Amino acid sequence: MQQVLQIRAGRGNSGGTTALNAFIELALMAGREPVILDAARNPSLSAFYPTLAVRPDSHQIGDVKEAVTTKILDVMLESKRNGVIDLGGGQDDTLVDYALDLDLVAFGRSMGIQIVFVVSFGPQMDDFDHVLEIKQRGLFDGAGVLLVRNEGVLRRGQDPGKVFGEIQQRPEFTDWIREGARPLYLPTLACLDDVRRLKLPLRDAAANKLVDGKGIGLTKAWMVKGWLEGWRQCCVENDCGEWMV
Image (tube, rainbow, N blue to C red; front, side, top):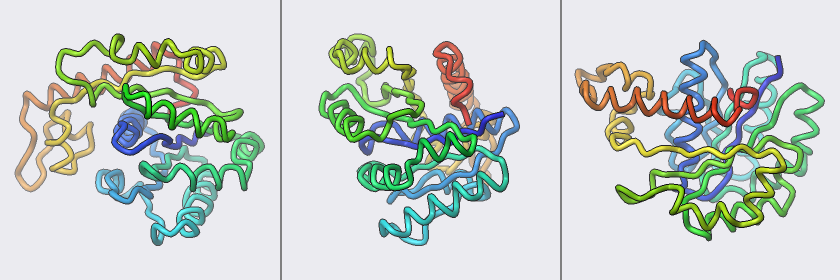
């Protein structure tokens, strides 16, 4: 079975880390343990998954690239596990440089690794234009692309279809879908801040697991469980199976 490497792309605060977190949770619930590189300047994945996640030695560009090479790609090849990379928002230049220097997609193809970019954005046109700028530099050529529209930045009661309508009607978006990109909605999780405050993996929050005697409570646990199931259904409906870690 082909391995998968999911890589976050897009601006900060656009839902990218939350989407990766949700993909990791579905993997763990299915019995898979992806190796994770948390290179975000405000790391969170390494707090949720201390036994699975690794960090670069520093946030210097050279150390981040070295971590991608030795702590993710080499480990994936040796262990036959899937992988996840979160460089955090604002580090797309580092990602582009590394991907083009290595010819990442060709490398993945030769090694049996499907490269998948998790591209997140909100309804602001600047978010999408930023993503298109990266696309024009060739980062996504030949790779799998998941276009994650983040509902978490919407106001209560806003219709995602209407709010994202201007972006979804752009020919760049519709052409991308025709080229094979899969569109996803990342739903709002109202109690996400509570989960993060306790540094709980989402599946533990859904089970109301206690941390130092504290949990999120049965009601919020039910919310998390429903949110995870909604995300799973969204991935199924958009035929993302072969791109899941």
